[in-house]
Amino acid sequence: MDTPIVDTSSTPTHDPATAPGRFVVRDAHHEDLPEAAAVQAVCFREIGQGVIPNDILTEVTGPGIVHTTIEQWNRFMDDGAIFKILIDRLDMKTVGVAMARVSTSPDAPTPWEIATLHVLPEARSCGASDDLLDACIGHQPAYVWVFADNARAISFYQRHGFRVDATDGAVDDSLGGVKLQRLIREDAIKSQ
Image 1 (cartoon, rainbow, N blue to C red):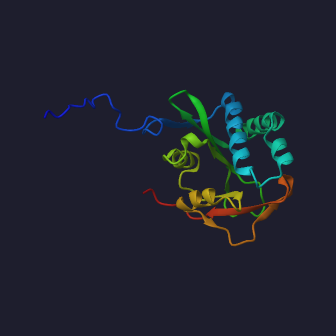
Image 2 (cartoon, rainbow, N blue to C red):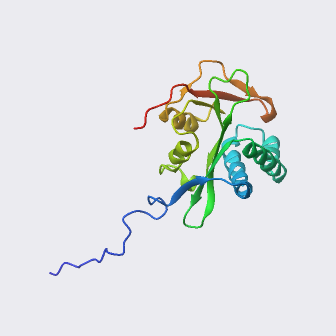
Image 3 (cartoon, rainbow, N blue to C red):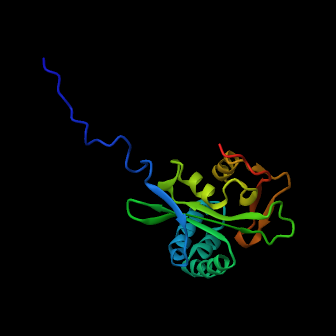
């Protein structure tokens, strides 16, 4: 009996959907902000489901707020905020955004605040989110606020040296009373 020969020379060694190098992080420019703000709105809708009342969620992720976000981000960029975007090389679309800025809060535990970090589902669980965070703030001290019940976000930041702040957190009344938790990375972590 002959053994069939299977030609695997054209079979990719990785699934193209998660292949190394599919996603690339780069500096964002003003012209990138509309697509980045749309990514944030999609991700915010996802994490807000069941947490933020539907009427408020619709309002804070709709076209009006996306436009307001773009205007605000343009000002932040002009004032020195660090913006990074994650690009999918398959279609050259923005699939993630991160922004860090010097905090304006008088009780900030570190100088830098991660003001946003959102990645669409197709770019999760492959290291792209890690690359985006690293490109945005490197290993320096920073803090971030997340929904208190967002275990995925809390776990992500803890993997990067952040710890849950011992305070009681905060409540965001503009989002219908959502409980927030602050995570802090006080010491610069060494490159691994």
